[in-house]
Image 1: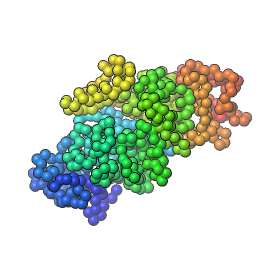
Image 2 (image 1 turned 90 degrees about the horizontal axis):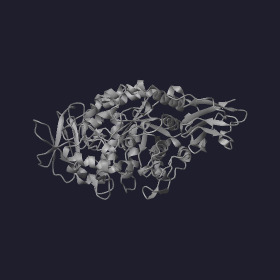
Image 3 (image 1 turned 120 degrees about the horizontal axis):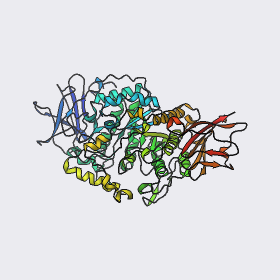
Image 4 (image 1 turned 180 degrees about the horizontal axis):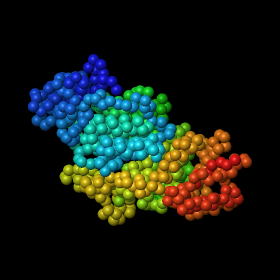
Length: 622
């Protein structure tokens, strides 16, 4: 991006270096009489009161790299800038002036994420590599691009208290955490990703501010709302007194990440807790600001929404918020039941049946307004008219792996054959698949909940985590003794991936690489078109999906999570090939390259035999 001319500011808040040694400051602090910039060893620099509760001013001899704090009224305490771009000494230390134009980008030709063809990879920078840094993660991007990933989804990176954490208790929304490197290291990571054809979206937390170490109330209580209940802290004020300034703070944050870090979009965390009764919901405004900031580049805007409200995917002209995709928990939950047999807590309303998988492939959400017993209310909304790629499906993600006693990966909880079959379904169905870091090589590292908190808070966090997981009867009945201490550095270290397992677990890698090659390269699977998809139940744990193609070049995907299946007679029209054609086995999850036992040529005439715990792909032979 280019520097604004004539001293104009980019954003309504924050410190902006002009490249010539001066820095413009602007802070929102309604109710305060005085706001001063403090640099050690120099006189305080008073900002001038501005309209709307802002204070502003330009301080000379304040180049990039300068450490500064803010003094409010006559208080002795110094505060970090609420819009700090970097906190080199932690969340409660001084802020640092950053010049975003010092980095020289090389991604001018990058056009953004293709939502229709996305394959998403969720990544936690602190555990993705042993080093836990931007630079170490960047060195691994070529490998991800090579196996078929198109889009990286970074777990939150805003500054938070402590030495490690998931990042969802962010207290500095503009400052990439010092734990992973410098701001320019993050820029270089994005630049490298674009060079390799990978998009990068950021998981952002716009539903609350971390309850520990959040300094926003020092500037104004109006950052928060008391009208709404939030499970993680105080709800942000998007529709109450002085909400205009709070909205602009977060809209500027959206623009900042897109403009100054060239990010390709966002995954909005827990959108159901972004409370807003305004005529235009803050999420719709954020999406519009992100697209405007990106200019001709495509941005990819994804939401997590527990109630599964498809309105978020509709265009604003039709009463929606304009997201590109939503996470689909329903797919995960039914798959988890099918693969593990465990039906408890929020899995209680799923049975893992073939029909549930067929419905998910054809219609996205399984709950579209029916009664949901676990919550004792109706859940979900209709998805008619929405393309399948707008629903993100997964077998694992950070929450779901960690929401167990031991944080085990799915390959440890089911049979190898069943997992291979489920992976085929995930990666070949028309929805957008998401892989959680290490899933592609069956990582042995668990993913546990970890958060470095002061000793006076650590016990409350441990207790809260245990209370949450007691919704699972198996944990409540004694499994809680297995829960790792979230505040222990050993818990954090256990979650770091062992990248050498890419070689030792080569069969898992081959499975993912080949399936993604089919997804991207096969002309029928690459269409991701649910309108040309139908399915049928073949047995208690088996089903078929047929992908129709205009030239009668159809595909069959048969998935069997149960025992070997003999199909005779065949009163199912989806198994009928086009006229004068036959089905030909093109791919099997039982290939020895994937750790399977091999697949005997199935009979596709008078009787079909489908191997146990397997997925098969058939093409047309003329």
